[in-house]
Length: 155
Length: 173
Image (cartoon, rainbow over all chains, first blue to last red; front, side, top):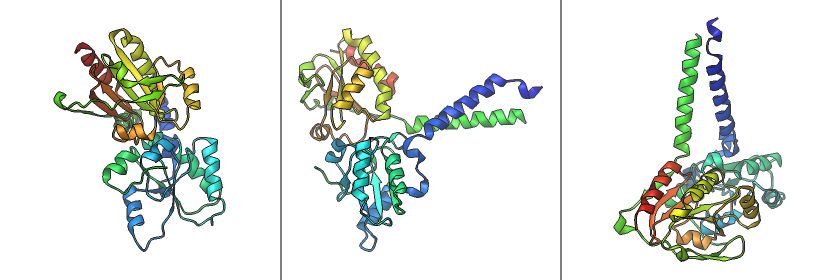
């Protein structure tokens, strides 16, 4: 009998958990941790003379890219819209499927970025096996520029 | 057994809520009154095509909100800004949205969908740089009646904090 003592409370708690789980499962937070690379790791890799250099692709807004981006990275556009996603597919289509690719955005806090998950999904669906997503916790300003990491401006 | 389960669930919920609040925190920066700098002036096109000059709003308290339609925290706070504009319009609050979208089409749709009640201009990399770099959204600048930057809120805004600041500024000359 005690098992049914507080069904409303249990229901409310279960609903809360479900809602929070749904919120957390959205967007970039769904990307597998094995697909991620931290800003510090990427920087080391870019500065190393021995490491293979990745193709760096920014999949966020152009206004943000024009203010600051990782030197050498290419602007593709927001992968949250069909046009951006298609440009991404077109850009990489001719590349060998083991090409090292790093995608990044940094438009918003990680859990809210709408661009990275679609881009990560698209590249893996095309058969790319060496794709990493740059984990930017808050935004590109805080997690890259403010740390003094190299930055380029302009188109 | 059931009691332990409920306790465990409660602990999980408390930790989860705490983590969520931490991750979505807004960082606000204030500087002493003497150090308040005048916000960079600009003239930008509104969605209607009309030009908006920031300095035309001197005498009002201005909330300058850098946002974008694809930015989820921005979308979530828009209804709060609409409400603030409604409640404080007669007391001289003016909210101005600066969209960092790459083009005006989605902004027009969003404006209609949300029945926005304050002007929105299309931003640019140049205006972002003039405001110290808008390299993550949302960012809100609160300007006093003299057009000086009173506060800068980075990330989703704590509306109660923002409203308190707005009231403070509205009460000052």
